[in-house]
Image (cartoon, rainbow, N blue to C red; front, side, top):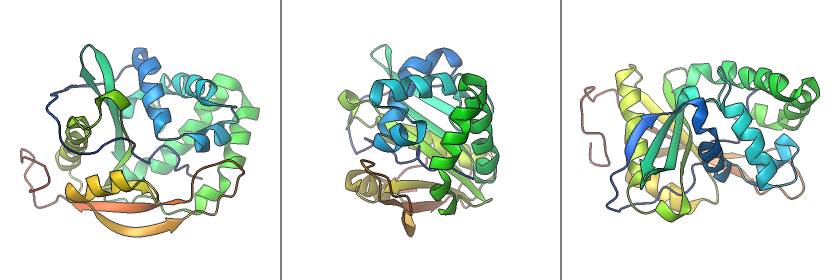
Length: 235
């Protein structure tokens, strides 16, 4: 089973003059990082985690973020800092590792809250298991989010370029990601950055109060670029 509820890339529109410091994440970053991750989840995360709202779901994400070996882990995260605070995050890893990372999330859930939590997470996420996964030749951007007060300053672009650089450095020909069907700002942003729609996916998940109807799979080929290329919209 896979879960595709952390991938919908919030607040990454164009432009701006802020030059963020990018660094790898650690477990100590869980507080600020989890709030950013939640911005890409919303009511879908509340449903899957079985939590009543934002604060409780962020607490769950923070605990999971501190754990190693799964798709929400600090291990896969690069953070953007500006004005002395964490203002953005990108989480990315090889597409071939998505299933392993998802199973790791279940194990992390057991460690944090026990078997009942993990089983509920698996059952509620079952419809998502039928949605297409990233290919083995792709480096997959699962999460990209920027704090609301720091949007439109180029931070999302810096994080995305970092993920593309990792794609090339690790020898993958394709960088891929997913965007919610109704997230038109993010869709336009990624198209400007050279990503194209590979597929439209309408979800089978039906849950009251969950604002999620599916996503666009987007890809960008990078195999013709050298590892030190200036990766951007005109590359």
